[in-house]
Length: 103
Image (cartoon, rainbow, N blue to C red):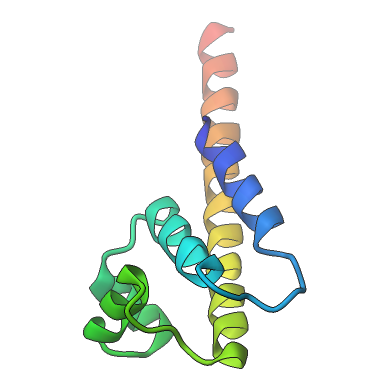
């Protein structure tokens, strides 16, 4: 699947307002980390938590409390939206460059 579509899908799916339960947070965390190419350490910096905390969240041994899960999901959504805009700008610049070269 094209990166733009993956990012758009992630943003849409993480926009649900229902509280995250069960493995939903773990799934969103892992998908967001993969899309953003985040290591546990980079994710920990993003969320301002320790790397072992992110590792425990990712492997499902613990999860943040309910309100924190929503906040962290929103942070991932924000970062994914930012990455989508960067990706779209790069594609647009590449298209303009290709057109300019063909003239």
